[in-house]
Image 1: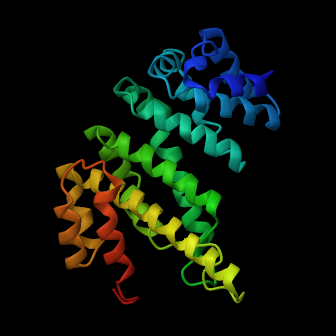
Image 2: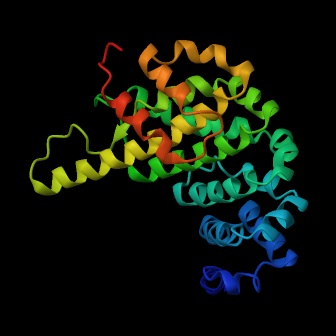
Image 3: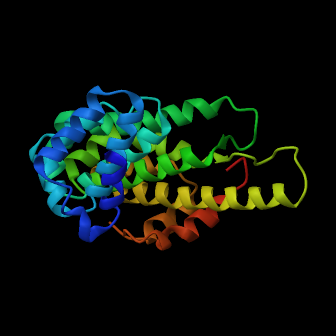
Amino acid sequence: VMVSLIGFAAHRELGALVGSTQTLDTLLRIVQQYDLPFKRLAADLLALLARREVVVAELLSMNGLGRLVGQLQSGDGPLTQSLLRVVCYLAADSASLSEIYQTGTVTVLLALVAGVVREYAGSQAAPPLLPPSRITDMQLVCTALTRISEDDELSQAIRACNGVCLLGKLLLVGPAGAGGSDSGAASSAAAGGGSASVASLRSYVFRALRFLFSMERNRKVFKRLFPPDLFAAFIDVGHYNAALAAYGHLVQRFAELSDKQ
Protein backbone atom coordinates (compact mmCIF):
# COMPACT_ATOMS: atom_id res chain seq x y z
CA VAL A 1 0.00 0.00 0.00
CA MET A 2 2.74 2.47 0.92
CA VAL A 3 4.56 1.83 -2.35
CA SER A 4 1.38 2.82 -4.19
CA LEU A 5 0.97 5.91 -2.00
CA ILE A 6 4.56 6.92 -2.73
CA GLY A 7 3.72 6.76 -6.42
CA PHE A 8 0.77 9.10 -5.88
CA ALA A 9 2.71 11.46 -3.61
CA ALA A 10 5.50 11.81 -6.18
CA HIS A 11 3.03 13.86 -8.25
CA ARG A 12 2.26 17.16 -6.54
CA GLU A 13 -1.28 17.33 -7.90
CA LEU A 14 -2.06 13.88 -6.48
CA GLY A 15 -0.18 14.34 -3.21
CA ALA A 16 -3.09 16.29 -1.74
CA LEU A 17 -5.16 13.11 -1.92
CA VAL A 18 -2.70 11.27 0.32
CA GLY A 19 -1.74 13.73 3.04
CA SER A 20 -4.70 13.57 5.40
CA THR A 21 -4.25 13.99 9.13
CA GLN A 22 -4.99 10.32 9.72
CA THR A 23 -2.45 9.26 7.08
CA LEU A 24 0.25 11.49 8.55
CA ASP A 25 -0.37 10.18 12.06
CA THR A 26 -0.17 6.60 10.80
CA LEU A 27 3.11 7.32 9.00
CA LEU A 28 4.60 8.90 12.12
CA ARG A 29 3.65 5.84 14.17
CA ILE A 30 5.19 3.53 11.58
CA VAL A 31 8.47 5.47 11.69
CA GLN A 32 8.49 5.22 15.47
CA GLN A 33 7.29 1.67 16.05
CA TYR A 34 7.54 -0.62 13.02
CA ASP A 35 10.35 -2.71 11.53
CA LEU A 36 13.00 -1.07 9.40
CA PRO A 37 11.60 -1.79 5.90
CA PHE A 38 8.29 -0.16 6.88
CA LYS A 39 10.08 2.74 8.58
CA ARG A 40 11.95 3.44 5.33
CA LEU A 41 8.79 3.44 3.24
CA ALA A 42 6.93 5.67 5.70
CA ALA A 43 9.85 8.11 5.83
CA ASP A 44 10.07 8.18 2.03
CA LEU A 45 6.37 9.00 1.83
CA LEU A 46 6.64 11.70 4.49
CA ALA A 47 9.55 13.29 2.61
CA LEU A 48 7.40 13.54 -0.51
CA LEU A 49 4.33 14.83 1.31
CA ALA A 50 6.28 17.42 3.31
CA ARG A 51 7.00 19.36 0.12
CA ARG A 52 3.53 20.88 0.60
CA GLU A 53 3.21 23.70 3.14
CA VAL A 54 -0.15 22.44 4.37
CA VAL A 55 1.44 19.08 5.26
CA VAL A 56 4.28 20.83 7.10
CA ALA A 57 1.75 22.80 9.14
CA GLU A 58 -0.18 19.62 9.93
CA LEU A 59 2.96 17.73 10.97
CA LEU A 60 3.97 20.55 13.29
CA SER A 61 0.51 20.59 14.87
CA MET A 62 0.94 16.86 15.57
CA ASN A 63 4.37 17.23 17.21
CA GLY A 64 5.76 15.58 14.10
CA LEU A 65 9.28 16.90 14.56
CA GLY A 66 9.49 15.54 18.08
CA ARG A 67 8.24 12.17 16.90
CA LEU A 68 10.77 11.95 14.08
CA VAL A 69 13.95 13.46 15.48
CA GLY A 70 14.64 10.49 17.75
CA GLN A 71 14.87 8.25 14.68
CA LEU A 72 17.60 10.33 13.01
CA GLN A 73 20.29 8.37 14.84
CA SER A 74 18.93 4.96 13.87
CA GLY A 75 22.16 4.14 12.03
CA ASP A 76 20.28 3.25 8.85
CA GLY A 77 21.39 5.46 5.96
CA PRO A 78 18.25 5.46 3.76
CA LEU A 79 15.98 6.09 6.76
CA THR A 80 18.14 8.90 8.09
CA GLN A 81 18.33 10.58 4.69
CA SER A 82 14.55 10.57 4.17
CA LEU A 83 13.95 11.88 7.69
CA LEU A 84 16.52 14.63 7.16
CA ARG A 85 14.56 15.77 4.11
CA VAL A 86 11.44 16.02 6.27
CA VAL A 87 13.36 17.97 8.92
CA CYS A 88 14.59 20.42 6.26
CA TYR A 89 11.02 21.11 5.16
CA LEU A 90 9.85 21.53 8.75
CA ALA A 91 12.77 23.79 9.66
CA ALA A 92 11.83 26.17 6.84
CA ASP A 93 8.60 27.00 8.66
CA SER A 94 9.00 29.63 11.38
CA ALA A 95 6.31 27.85 13.40
CA SER A 96 8.79 24.99 13.95
CA LEU A 97 11.29 27.05 15.94
CA SER A 98 9.89 26.39 19.40
CA GLU A 99 9.57 22.67 18.69
CA ILE A 100 13.14 22.56 17.33
CA TYR A 101 14.34 24.04 20.61
CA GLN A 102 12.20 21.81 22.83
CA THR A 103 13.00 18.55 21.03
CA GLY A 104 16.78 18.99 20.99
CA THR A 105 16.86 18.90 17.21
CA VAL A 106 20.04 21.01 17.12
CA THR A 107 21.87 18.52 19.34
CA VAL A 108 20.79 15.57 17.19
CA LEU A 109 21.81 17.25 13.92
CA LEU A 110 25.22 18.17 15.32
CA ALA A 111 25.63 14.62 16.64
CA LEU A 112 25.32 13.42 13.04
CA VAL A 113 28.07 15.85 12.00
CA ALA A 114 30.21 14.80 14.96
CA GLY A 115 29.77 11.16 13.96
CA VAL A 116 31.15 11.84 10.50
CA VAL A 117 34.01 13.90 11.92
CA ARG A 118 34.95 11.14 14.39
CA GLU A 119 34.60 8.39 11.81
CA TYR A 120 36.98 10.01 9.38
CA ALA A 121 39.36 11.71 11.81
CA GLY A 122 41.35 8.49 12.07
CA SER A 123 41.33 7.74 8.35
CA GLN A 124 44.73 6.97 6.84
CA ALA A 125 43.68 8.67 3.60
CA ALA A 126 44.45 12.33 2.94
CA PRO A 127 41.94 13.88 2.87
CA PRO A 128 39.65 11.59 4.89
CA LEU A 129 37.11 9.86 2.65
CA LEU A 130 33.35 10.32 2.62
CA PRO A 131 31.05 8.09 0.52
CA PRO A 132 28.34 9.72 -1.64
CA SER A 133 25.43 8.77 0.64
CA ARG A 134 27.09 10.43 3.62
CA ILE A 135 27.82 13.53 1.54
CA THR A 136 24.08 13.81 0.84
CA ASP A 137 23.33 13.33 4.54
CA MET A 138 25.67 16.16 5.46
CA GLN A 139 24.25 18.44 2.76
CA LEU A 140 20.81 17.92 4.28
CA VAL A 141 22.10 18.49 7.82
CA CYS A 142 23.77 21.73 6.70
CA THR A 143 20.56 22.84 4.99
CA ALA A 144 18.58 22.24 8.18
CA LEU A 145 21.18 24.06 10.31
CA THR A 146 21.16 26.97 7.85
CA ARG A 147 17.41 27.37 8.16
CA ILE A 148 17.47 26.94 11.93
CA SER A 149 20.25 29.52 12.36
CA GLU A 150 18.02 32.28 10.99
CA ASP A 151 16.63 32.38 14.54
CA ASP A 152 19.05 34.15 16.89
CA GLU A 153 18.37 31.94 19.90
CA LEU A 154 18.81 28.72 17.92
CA SER A 155 21.87 30.13 16.16
CA GLN A 156 23.46 30.71 19.55
CA ALA A 157 22.46 27.18 20.57
CA ILE A 158 24.31 25.77 17.54
CA ARG A 159 27.46 27.66 18.54
CA ALA A 160 27.09 26.58 22.18
CA CYS A 161 26.96 22.94 21.03
CA ASN A 162 30.31 23.36 19.24
CA GLY A 163 28.57 23.57 15.89
CA VAL A 164 30.98 26.08 14.36
CA CYS A 165 34.00 23.88 15.09
CA LEU A 166 32.26 20.72 13.87
CA LEU A 167 31.21 22.33 10.60
CA GLY A 168 34.74 23.65 10.15
CA LYS A 169 36.10 20.12 10.51
CA LEU A 170 33.54 18.87 7.99
CA LEU A 171 35.27 21.02 5.37
CA LEU A 172 38.27 18.69 5.61
CA VAL A 173 36.65 15.46 4.44
CA GLY A 174 37.09 14.20 0.88
CA PRO A 175 35.26 11.83 -1.50
CA ALA A 176 35.48 8.06 -1.27
CA GLY A 177 38.00 6.92 -3.84
CA ALA A 178 40.23 9.98 -3.52
CA GLY A 179 43.85 9.08 -3.18
CA GLY A 180 43.20 5.40 -3.90
CA SER A 181 45.54 3.14 -5.81
CA ASP A 182 43.10 2.23 -8.62
CA SER A 183 44.04 3.48 -12.04
CA GLY A 184 42.35 4.00 -15.39
CA ALA A 185 39.67 6.14 -16.92
CA ALA A 186 36.87 4.77 -14.72
CA SER A 187 38.83 5.60 -11.58
CA SER A 188 39.59 9.11 -12.84
CA ALA A 189 35.95 9.71 -13.69
CA ALA A 190 34.87 8.51 -10.26
CA ALA A 191 37.44 10.73 -8.57
CA GLY A 192 36.24 13.71 -10.59
CA GLY A 193 32.64 13.07 -9.63
CA GLY A 194 33.63 12.64 -6.00
CA SER A 195 35.57 15.89 -6.03
CA ALA A 196 32.53 17.70 -7.43
CA SER A 197 30.36 16.21 -4.66
CA VAL A 198 32.76 17.36 -1.98
CA ALA A 199 32.93 20.84 -3.52
CA SER A 200 29.14 20.93 -3.38
CA LEU A 201 29.17 19.79 0.27
CA ARG A 202 31.64 22.52 1.14
CA SER A 203 29.28 25.10 -0.37
CA TYR A 204 26.57 23.86 1.99
CA VAL A 205 28.97 23.98 4.94
CA PHE A 206 30.15 27.50 4.14
CA ARG A 207 26.54 28.65 3.81
CA ALA A 208 25.64 27.22 7.22
CA LEU A 209 28.71 28.84 8.76
CA ARG A 210 27.97 32.19 7.12
CA PHE A 211 24.40 32.17 8.46
CA LEU A 212 25.80 31.46 11.94
CA PHE A 213 28.30 34.30 11.52
CA SER A 214 25.43 36.65 10.65
CA MET A 215 24.47 36.77 14.32
CA GLU A 216 26.85 39.16 16.07
CA ARG A 217 27.23 37.09 19.25
CA ASN A 218 28.65 34.21 17.21
CA ARG A 219 31.37 36.12 15.39
CA LYS A 220 34.24 35.94 17.85
CA VAL A 221 34.73 32.18 17.39
CA PHE A 222 35.13 32.58 13.61
CA LYS A 223 38.33 34.60 13.91
CA ARG A 224 40.17 31.40 14.81
CA LEU A 225 38.55 29.32 12.06
CA PHE A 226 39.92 30.73 8.78
CA PRO A 227 43.15 32.38 7.62
CA PRO A 228 42.80 36.16 7.00
CA ASP A 229 42.28 36.13 3.21
CA LEU A 230 39.63 33.43 3.35
CA PHE A 231 37.99 35.12 6.32
CA ALA A 232 37.74 38.39 4.39
CA ALA A 233 36.10 36.65 1.44
CA PHE A 234 33.80 34.84 3.86
CA ILE A 235 32.63 38.15 5.30
CA ASP A 236 32.08 39.63 1.84
CA VAL A 237 29.41 37.04 1.00
CA GLY A 238 26.98 39.02 3.13
CA HIS A 239 24.51 38.13 5.86
CA TYR A 240 21.87 35.44 5.30
CA ASN A 241 22.78 34.88 1.66
CA ALA A 242 20.97 31.64 0.78
CA ALA A 243 22.28 31.28 -2.80
CA LEU A 244 24.71 28.34 -2.90
CA ALA A 245 26.45 29.84 -5.92
CA ALA A 246 27.61 32.72 -3.71
CA TYR A 247 29.87 30.29 -1.81
CA GLY A 248 31.62 28.76 -4.82
CA HIS A 249 34.59 31.12 -4.64
CA LEU A 250 35.05 30.26 -0.96
CA VAL A 251 35.21 26.56 -1.85
CA GLN A 252 37.85 27.33 -4.49
CA ARG A 253 39.91 29.44 -2.11
CA PHE A 254 39.67 26.77 0.56
CA ALA A 255 40.88 24.11 -1.91
CA GLU A 256 43.91 26.28 -2.69
CA LEU A 257 45.00 26.55 0.95
CA SER A 258 48.21 24.79 1.87
CA ASP A 259 48.22 22.01 4.47
CA LYS A 260 49.94 24.37 6.90
CA GLN A 261 47.19 26.96 6.55
